[in-house]
Each structure stands twice: as C-alpha cells, then as structure tokens.
Amino acid sequence: MLQNLLISILFRCPACNHSSESRSFPYCTACIDSLTPCPPLCKNCASPACIATSQLSCSRQWIKNDLIDSFHAGYVLAGPGYKVLKRWKVRHGIFSDKRILKVLDTFCIKLQKLNIQAIIPMPQKFKRSWAIGGSPAEKIAHTISKKSKIPLMTALKICPSTTQGKRQAELSQIDRIQNKLNFSVASSEIDRPISDILLVDDFMTTGHTLRQAAHVLKISNAGKIHVFCLGIRLDQAQQHTHLGYCT
Image 1 (tube, rainbow, N blue to C red):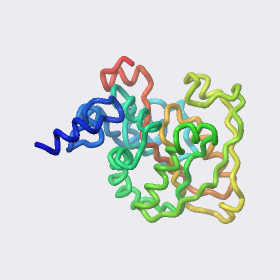
Image 2 (image 1 turned 90 degrees about the vertical axis):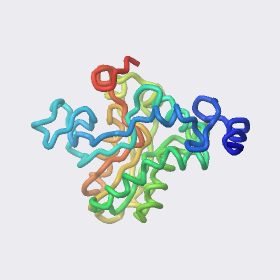
Image 3 (image 1 turned 120 degrees about the vertical axis):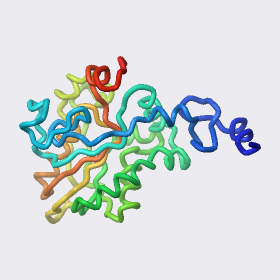
Image 4 (image 1 turned 90 degrees about the horizontal axis):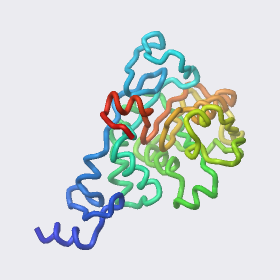
C-alpha cells in the first residue's frame, strides 16, 4: 500500500503524465492496456488483417514484397497505444525500454526457427537521432541481438531524401511510396554472402523504406531477408474495419 502511494506521488507515466502504478511501472495501467499485440503478418502485404499462406491467397495481391521473406511486429499502431509508442521513441529510458521492449521476449522465441546470421537496424540521420536521444531502431536491434546472441551489424547508411529533405514519417502515404530513398552498404560489413538477415525498424506504415533497404542488401550478397518492426500501422480503413478506430 505504501509502495503504491509513493509511486503515485513521485512517479508519473511517461506517456500520459498520470500516476504510475507498481504493476505497470513506469507506465500507468491505462497506457499499458492500450497497447495492442500484433498478430501474425501476411508474408506478402505485411498486414495483420490479412493472414495469407501465399501471394495468391493475399487480399492485397497488388502489393509485391518479393525481396522480403517474412514480416514480424510487436504491436499494432492504432488507438491510444499508438500515442504511447510514439512517446516512447522520444522519452525512452531504462525502465520504459524494459516495459515496452518486453514484447521482444516472445519474438526471440520465434526467431529460433529462422536461420538468422546477422541483425541489421535501419539507419537514421544523425540530426534526428540526436534530437530524440538515440536511434529507436538501433535500440530494438541491440536488444534482439543481446537476447538472441545473434551478431549486430550496422551495415546500412542512408543518403539524403529527394523529397525536400523531409523525413519519411512526415510524408503522406502516397508521398512515402513515391519518395526515392537511397541507401548504401558498407563493404567492410558485408564482405561475404549472408544467408539470412533480420532487418529491424521501429515503425512500419507502407513498408516502402524497408523494401528499398532490402533491395540494396540483396545486391550486396544478402540471402533471405526477414523484417521485424516494433509497431505496424494499419491504414484508416483497416483500423476502422478491424479495430473500430476512426483515427
């Protein structure tokens, strides 16, 4: 009783600034309950609303993901939980990381079935990384590497975007797909064929950035490419149909 009282007085939820509770510390119970675990993703269109065994059975067959062998995600970015995860990106810390990245325990068990030889985080521009206190993708990749004992490689580098220097997250869905992203691979990192790679990012909306990165890795001796994102975002129609959100 005294412990809960002290926590409610001294500690505030980093997502909503309400009082934290001991069982969900450092977040409040409402914020933790708002996180939506992600179900298995379609191997073709990467949507949690389409569970397909092949491209022919996919409900969105016009989406081609020939370069990526499988998609995985921790959470669905929808409703209040989306705001919690967005706040984590800019207000992360030891206790916040431990609570939000707990979902990686389950994923690392699934990871044992894949013959992953290297984990590669999606790169982030230095200015953005400095502004939010470090790259979330690198933090996620480092945690997966530590739990799975699979080596981490910082092989990808990002070149300036052609869309007036804007970040991909600042663009509309149409602009994201049309935006030409340029990546390069450090030859010193991938100097021999690697059978399976786990490409890690924080959030995925259209998957355009990941496909561009996968293309660069493929022409640089990479074999199979699997993707893990902490969160995947449905479009507005899917959120309304499958989750009841109209955001």
